[in-house]
Image 1 (cartoon, rainbow, N blue to C red):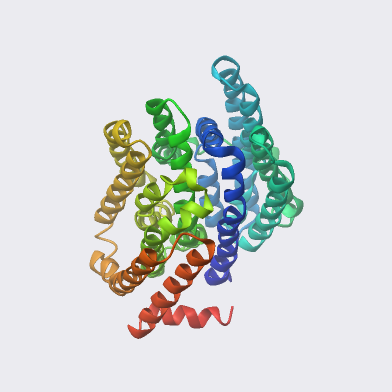
Image 2: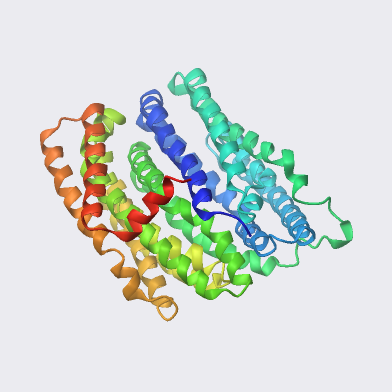
Length: 475
């Protein structure tokens, strides 16, 4: 198999960078056009439809990606896997689409917004991104995503002009997702054959699909339930608006760290199927080191510059976002680590049941913390609950795999990055006290943070950093 993880990561990273640049362009505009309660309405309705998307997706995409990674080299087998997974997906989407429309007819307060969101459920039946991820064909995915995202940005500035245009805003989100999914079908028959009806058995591995679905449910509980509980306890959309904007920024930055996971899952699955466990462990150690190298400075940097960024980026009415962002920035570290242990290691090695248990524990912790903290601290309480839950998951998963992966080595890898991030944080803290909030000052702080972090790692002669910087020159 000649797939290059470095190139695939860079392809995926390019798109993640576009995802970060896109909100830098559109969020200040959308925040002012829709205003906090409009952003909160978007956040709340998105949270509701996310549950239906969750059940319509089930564990099918994770299962499909993993199964395709096992049969990358066999066209007949991957054709069979593709059509089985796709047929299962279509049947499941149809069922949940009917349930969704029944729900919005009887229970929704704004049926038009929910009707538009329904397109997002239809998108699932068209999506075949999982297939190309399983084949490690990330260039095609990234090319498609970049094209569609640019169109989406242009659309927002042309059509979303007033607070009442929230309908057009949501329509743009779902319709461009649909366009991107349709584009991928163009060359699908270069990789698979037409379905053979007698070989179709879409429900053959339904128990495995369900076992992969359970942790997804638990994860969504503390991703989406936060917003619903904020709305329930506050009876307005303002706090949801603050929480939405803060978590949006922290999770966009997080994508830089976990984008390697998307690339690693099919590689680990392939090596596991070939019983090359030494190579699997080698990749895991590299992933942990990579996560420390990026997550620590990104998290600390975001904490230090949040007071400078929020006022000009979102507007003065979003001042509370800064406090929420400082807390949610810690998610970058904990999700970065548990993404490696759980998603990159346990799932490809067919131990999704262990992964499920840890995620369920995290979900329970999150719900308990939400009930305690949200009524008192609102959006800040929800952010604290999410961080605590992710920390519990990260620690528990590391304890579980300690017999296979050396915890001392994993923790030891963090040393240089902790030192460099700490010194960088001091520099940024001093600048924060001096600079007034402005786009120029925020840019200066970001550049200062990057330069100081890189120089410190060079001074410490961090081998992992230096080796990979040299490799980038030749990609």
